[in-house]
Image 1 (cartoon, rainbow, N blue to C red):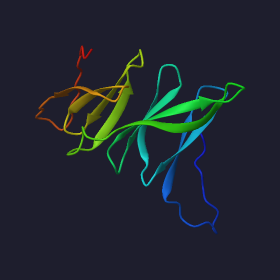
Image 2: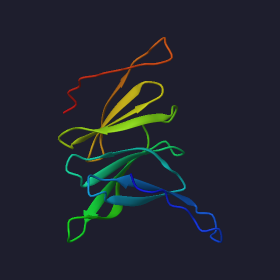
Image 3: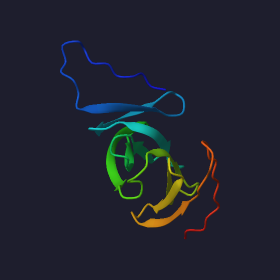
Length: 144
């Protein structure tokens, strides 16, 4: 993992929270500035060209496109998509990406599972009611 950024004592406080994500060896990293928020979870797309984050304060799913430099190392990241409407009432727990890279999954504390397409459309939702304090929900879906 990359090192956490620290501000010199004379620097003013930052409005954003830096998020450093480690890549495969030789320990390359990408730094994203998620303004007025911080990322709780991050997942790489199967082709390592996109990064999916779930944010803590806004409770949203963000997709960033990671550009490559000429030497093949990761370069800058630019916002690509933002999914805002699915998890309004409950905290986001995690995000995932399908192995083909076409769908994004997000799950919240109230066991709502949302599947999104990378075209920005909302595919489907599943919700499971549980009686315990912990829930392990596995769904096999065909959202195509």
